[in-house]
View 1 (cartoon, rainbow, N blue to C red):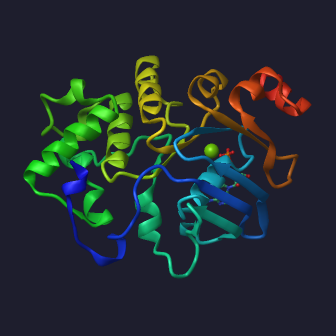
View 2 (cartoon, rainbow, N blue to C red):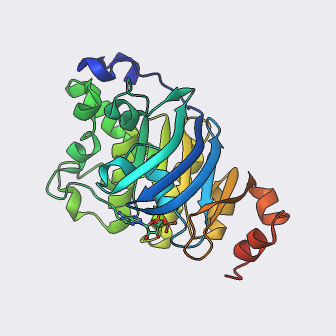
Length: 274
Ligand code: ADP
Ligand code: MG
């Protein structure tokens, strides 16, 4: 298995494994002069699924991108605050971006496999960047294992060497999940992973989330309240008043958030009143 994989590329060799606690502390974010998040703190517990809910534009995607250092790729973007992965500040100058991205994987709303690359090669496309060297046998193992975890194996096992671009949208999204999982991330961030998917693929993705529970810390942005209720252990409700930066109104156990919200704005949102 993965434990036997040899590793090269010095900088990312010593990354720890297993579900990690991810803690955002006082995160504020700007695009140019415009502040879009104001002192957001949230702890995502190891092995749990945390759903981020809230209306469009309140900063959920920005928050998610901050959690794996993608926010800094936008030239006008800046931020304040800390992100701790099991205590290590991923923004500390001694920490490499690649180490953070390897441990904290990301799946986007729009599936983005390499269309001309085979399903097999797509699945292991992240290995090199992560500094993981695998021989043929190890790769074969990793491809099957990752595709199984992403609930895609049965559908593609007979056409692994066909292009990823030939798959349906839902299958492409699961291929992207498999690609993320192949490097054994400790945290998986998912930004509305099902909003472009048909019900069957949505169900498969939810099965994947369920089966990863306990092994990986998952953070999922979703507009689908039923989905948040089905897949998450904890929920954080983001809100931004008109032209104001976003923040968390309420965070807690998913059952409590849906069954007995403390804030009337949470109650209005989860009951579809805005
Ligand atoms: P959500 O995911 O909750 O819909 P976003 O994080 O995408 O919210 O956006 C938060 C705010 O930041 C919005 O007002 C949005 O217009 C703005 N924003 C997002 N990305 C950029 C960007 N690359 N440049 C400038 N403004 C942005
Ligand atoms: Mg978004």
